[in-house]
Amino acid sequence: MDMLTIAKQRFTSKHYDVSRRISEQDMQALRETLRLTPSSVNSQPWHFFEVSTPEGKDALLPAVLDFNKERVQKASHVVICAIRKDLNATFLDRLLAQEVADGRFSPEEARNGSDSGRRHFVDLHVNQLKDALNWETHQAYIAMGFLLYAAAGMGINATPIEGLDMEAMDRILKLDEQGLKTVYCVSLGYGDPSDANAVRPKSRLPLQEVYTILND
Image (cartoon, rainbow, N blue to C red; front, top):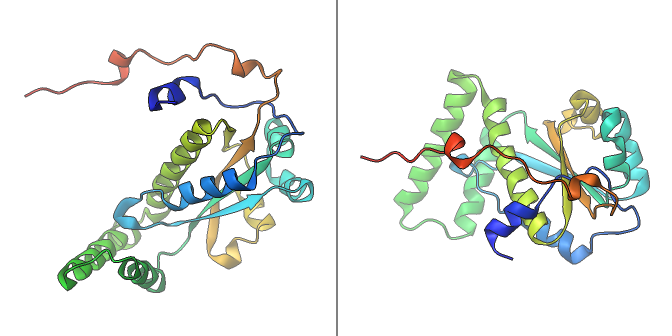
């Protein structure tokens, strides 16, 4: 399926077929897609939590607003995205060590330049603009886009969910003690055949209203 067809055909599932499960092979592909998501200065400020058992999904429900509960309960899998409360030196060192191990830098000056550039932007958002969590959240939504698009390309339905009590989700997952906070979750599975959203025409503003080509 070509990329434009995927974009045209995907839709947000409102109802899931509880009898259908995503295969482990397909879930592993989606996990890798999330891992490979790009981020500003390769900051990777996220951690993803996956829940797939009925008991695990039920445990999340106190943090899910009423209209979204079924989309969590009946989905095959639910992925919760959290971001780091502190992009500290230890984490930045870890990022650099991984980049070195992956062979990104040659010569040595490239390593030092990448590291100093990342630390500059982290310092900018943490200490000067004081909007680090907002900046990290922007990165996290890139990951959501990757996940939604990849799932659609694999024939898997998805529901992006912000209708959450974020603090309650933090408590359920014990995120505070891990230095993390919830930003969203995504339900994944196979849509119920009766889901009316699957057959409704897609409605978007015309291209000329949302896209401008700037010529010299």
